[in-house]
Image 1 (tube, rainbow, N blue to C red):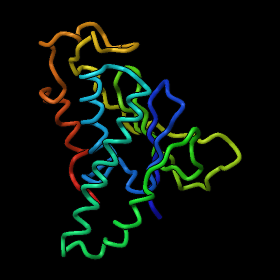
Image 2 (cartoon, rainbow, N blue to C red):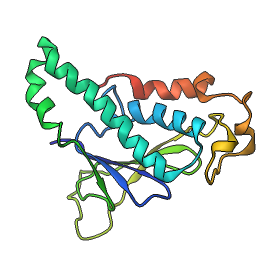
Image 3 (tube, one colour):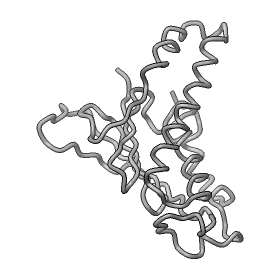
Image 4 (cartoon, rainbow, N blue to C red):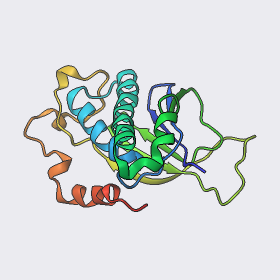
Length: 186
């Protein structure tokens, strides 16, 4: 069974649905695309829910298309060609509510954090009640400096609008935390 996930941005009713590879870690996982996307988006635009959801879906589709092209052209990946053709019309969707079979929920907060929620499938999914996720991790990306002139409803602390503030990718503790999301542990 595929690992389904959904990605939401605080303040937007639209939720991105990802049908497979919804786990956080590895080069195929959600955070491999989501972390650099959120950093770049908040650096350039600040908090803007509508654009963030749309551009986030675009970032995932670009990454999926690059993988699909590899599946279609690399002889060593011939076994994945049937999947490459199927993903041309499936793989991602847009929703207004959570799916009953979602394993991971990623929330991009107004402050620029990514909250990773995991649903325990050890028990039977409850399709009648509310879907609950246990917070597995919180990735603070709010220290990304960006231009306040481009922020729409920005909730970022004032010091993050200065060009001399420390970007997370140069912070040794942040780099160590990111390392667990970029190794391939499949």
